[in-house]
Image 1 (cartoon, helix red, strand yellow):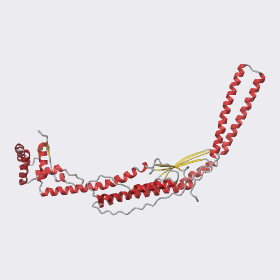
Image 2 (cartoon, helix red, strand yellow; image 1 turned 60 degrees about the vertical axis):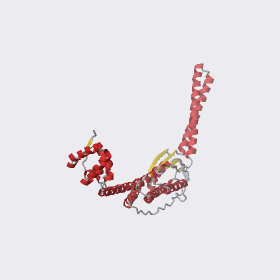
Image 3 (cartoon, rainbow, N blue to C red; image 1 turned 90 degrees about the vertical axis):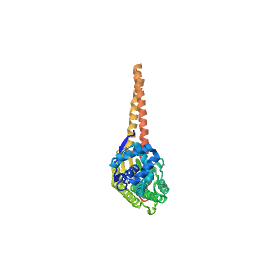
Image 4 (cartoon, rainbow, N blue to C red; image 1 turned 90 degrees about the horizontal axis):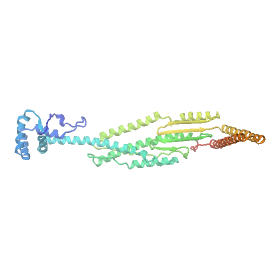
Length: 407
């Protein structure tokens, strides 16, 4: 015996609209038409049932109809349900067919809306998700290298392919949303380029400021996932290629939704750009404070080790300064040389005493230990002198990048 289900039908069972979000249940629609058939329609259904499933099945369903279904009982077995569902599509009246066509068109329209929004979203999101993967291994040596990255991004955007699949949209409609996707990508790229250019124009004038010492600076561009060693980069004025964004004209049946999505995206782009400005700490004032602090400490003739990170609109600028005064290093060398001279004098005197007094073997052994200690000490001091000389050479040179002319 098949398990029995109780179906309670209402208009909501077959309702579907983009506004309410109800999804059409085709089987319930067919059963609803079956239970609401006229007597004439039910005769046709029953004859078809008998022809398809035999006299025995017909007698059983007829009994169920007269004893239950005609009195409002909507209980039927799995077998009965499956058999009714199999014959009803061909027996629908004209009104039911019209209703079904209307519902199908509404369902296709809703699916079309989803394809428009999802297609644009997937395409744009995929473009920027892969953006940082193309340049992470690139070595940036000149500002011109960044300009070439800009050009590559523009070319990538021009050859942007729409991501499907699409079951409802036709070729003209997919072409339109592809243009919308490109428009959004180009708009975001222009913002990125402008932010990178602004960061460079902010910190470039300050890259040539260290009088002596070791200066290192690294700028990380978040969008492209690249790190630029500014101490090894040849500086020149950064160039940003012009991005010409063609106007888009949308005339499809989904114009209302694509226009709304585009408007929301443009608002989101501007909002993100404003947030980047709000949270950025890379500005001339902050850099000047940092450098003034360096100048103040360097004038005190003391060792300086400073690190700082500045968040820009498009990335982070990390600066480190290490400086040891030359005078301090020369003093350290003089101290080491003095120590070597003093210990050499002491060692010489001890050797003379041992020779003249002719001490026993035990004292000779002790003297040998002192000589070993002396040579170890002298060796360490000589290493220190060499180290200090290396640092004088290191910190006595100006370590900086080349700043744009006129800065």
